[in-house]
Image (cartoon, rainbow, N blue to C red; front, top):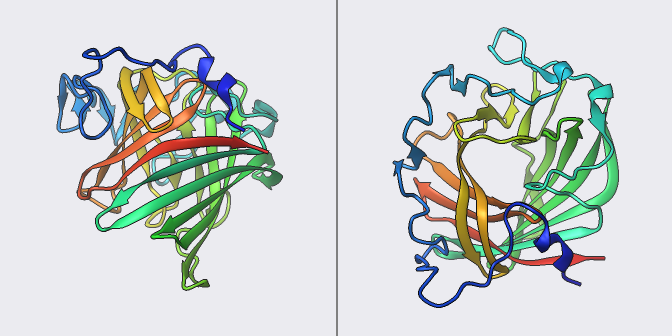
Length: 281
């Protein structure tokens, strides 16, 4: 059953455009989406940035989760009392029993990504995280299965505490590379979505030196996007990258009340995934 109610929340709303008003580009994003953007980043995006993180990156983050200086320059202090049991950030809502289905292409392969919010929890650094199963199929064959661990603090920031990742080849697990857990072997949690995102905010999404170093930056809050599941306006747009794979850059679009709706590789590749369905048990 489709979650129709989620599409009518405040913020980025579903919108059925009239003819001649959307001017959609081939990527499903309306013309003007990148207006004022230089090489995928808005002008002044990195102004005031130090060590890859803009000033005020942790604005709105609970006091117990503010960064302190460590050997790597990144050392968030996690207090379990600062976290709540649900994840209802409008740009990244995770309701147990919900499956988000994405489809797209990468080079010569078709991709289907099924993201299922389980009813399971995992205790990480004393925080009761929600377990999300992410299964990727290429040309109909399962190639990756990941169990991700998320939690939301009292200010609405959604934190990423690690993952159990498995790569498959012809039904057999061939690698667990990419797995990490915050608090183990120097790994640290990061923010997947801020509670009060502002253009120019940059933040770490994860951190394990040499293994998991994804970064994100908010570059717009008013994008219009059209995908198979519907049309949305006033969406949040991020630039996401990792220093471990220089030259690769993605743009992601998040609709308030729905979550991620579109992902596009804009440098170093051609992958595109868009939301095609939302299913509840």
